[in-house]
Length: 314
Length: 303
Image 1: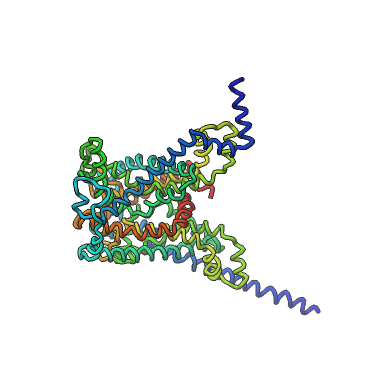
Image 2: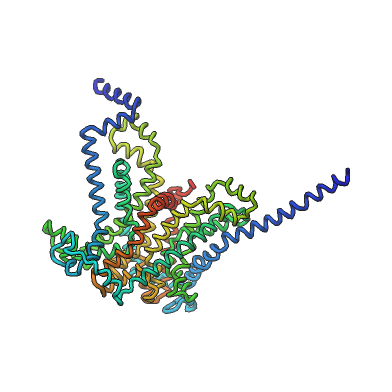
């Protein structure tokens, strides 16, 4: 009787230990099987380029991407002097000052309108969302050749001529800067629907009981309801939308490139970098510019995380 | 006092039946006017939103002389269907190759991104590996820098690999999206664990549980991410422009941009090419809008 009882624990402890070791090895293998390919790609195509660029940004690198001709901080000093790179940051600032509040107000307005109607609501939502399917290149093409082409057969000038306004050369002049009208409206058309969907999702998460409570408490017009219920309840959505709008404006390239090309008066940062790196093959200044832009956007992202505590809710 | 009395009664009525009050308010003359104004605003907005699409179609099926005629007309005098054959047989345009390149790039990018990012997200959410947390943070850090900002650094690596003017140069560097992996991780964290445990009891490993249980039960989420990714990749411009420098590797966006800036081809051909380039997306859009709206609502906020 005693022998089996002694033997039994010994026999039963060894296999679990082996299983446990095998299971940990299995866990490690499984983890690398799932995550390994992604991590390898991330190292090669995200981390390595950044490291390489930081190193190259301290070199003179004309027509080459090999570091070696060290110039210290010269590339950074060149860019941060008054000149085209700082101008490009100013262009971005003006652009953001137009596009962020306009998109915010119009997409929120459309979402509120849609939220108040029932008949044909899905149809209107689809219509406003449809431009999301269109590319910036195609939209720029329509804006440049059909709506704002600056000649008499253009749609904008045709409509203005009904009110006795002379032809406006929308994209051909920087004084007055009519091109902002073209640049801002094309992005408005392309992105309002997207942000409208975000606001609609936010609106639908607001509990109807809050509105009933507000009616009980004497909120009688829709402005009061909006001011005290809807807008505060949309806070998380609003912060996210503002951040997305800002980050997307920071990366503006397609419409500036296709509508204005390498014009000296309205070149946002990425267009400037494109002509520096791909046009002039000046990779020293190109990488230094990329490093500055990456640092600036990282500061913004971290600062907004501090200020709004966004993402803490995850 | 006399002013306060109606307020009280109205409040009492609101307490008793708030829904009823609202319904009655809608049938007042003021409510009807507000409703009419709302629909007026919606219809005007809808016309403005659809107008650019109409202009594409109108110009695509007109002749250049009609487009540039002094009197602007809403409808072309005659619909020129022969513009199609002109576009597809014009040797200086080669729109078919550009469409083919776009299809190859967008389909492979979407498939590759779904595979890589969903597996990485699943591993991070479910496999208890010792270093999973630091690895997750190393992915989160990359979310702070939008990929477009580092196109010069990425170009340098691709040029060192001698991948300029290749499909893999356009496709591969875009696949490793920290954001998509993050979304999949969040999604899998909320996936019902009991389903996977049943699979494990049946003797499936992590890979088996993932392929046979998790993926088949996550169709809507995968579809939402797939539609968003496909549209973004089909419409992408900066990266294909930087890498696909030779005409044989132009995506349709790069081809259209080149024709637009060079102004070497007819207006109606350009607009028809634009129409052809958005047709697949409008189709995807109309057929899969449910997933798209859901995906935007779910993923946009977390950006």
